[in-house]
Amino acid sequence: MSWLIAGCGDLGTEVGLRAAAAGHVVHGLRRSAHLLPPAIRPIAGDLGGDLPELPTDVEVVILTAAADRRDVDAYRRAYVDGPGRVLDALADAGVSPRRVLFVGSTAVYGVTDGSWVDETTPTEPATATGAVLVEAERTLWNRRPDAISLRLAGVYGPGRTRLLDQVRQGRAVVPDPPVHTNRIHRDDAAAAIVHLVSAVEKPATCYLGVDDDPAERGEVLRFLAAQLDAPPPPTGPDERSRGGDKRCRNDRLRATGATFTYPTFREGYRALLDGVGARHP
Image (cartoon, rainbow, N blue to C red; front, side, top):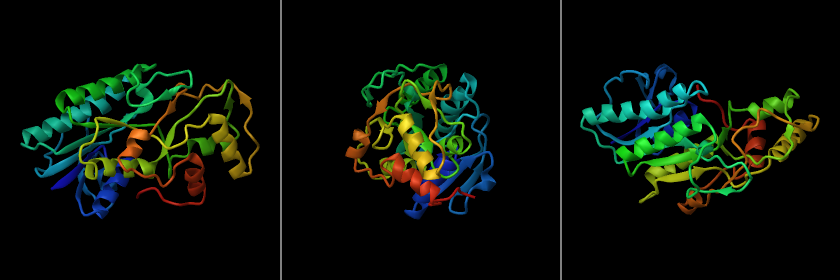
């Protein structure tokens, strides 16, 4: 039996390498399949169009596609149409996977007052793209009621250094009023995916993929500035801040036995600055 990672980019590749290391046969579906490392069997295909023939022994499907633009059409292609095409192709081949996991987003929550959010919080997104993510989950659950949605917050790690770059370049601004932010290191996100599909006997239908510390953005930026020996960022309006103002809980994910190598941004960014981990070839 094998795993299929559809939309096998940076996060999907890390998932695939971990699954392969655990002894699973892993297939990676992406347009530029030649970029995948040898441990992942490449399948060249575009989730936005007709798909090639897929393996007939797929037991686990991981849907990790990412939109190439931040607009409704791109989101619908990536998160609604793409997963539908994958499941259609598998069904046409007579394949019924044991587990299906969709990588979603905490953008399904439109909370703006800094309150706590968990899996029971109503999904009332504040943006049109967030509404597409809600649509994507509902469409998937209508088809596969047992599918898992892992709602990730901002993923950082090797090659994902937006905040570090802003601080280095003097472009970071501490929001006034303060705003809470939520994040997860890429490696912890990948580990959570592998854990949920392979080690949890009866998973719930959704989990929040966030670390232990929904810190204020200003706290994160000041920490990064200190680590970089850079001037503390100024305080003021920051139009780059997005995602509302919420504090996401990871209690449900933790309760499954999931562990974190980087439980807060401090450990994660220190490792990143020390060169721990690397982007995949």
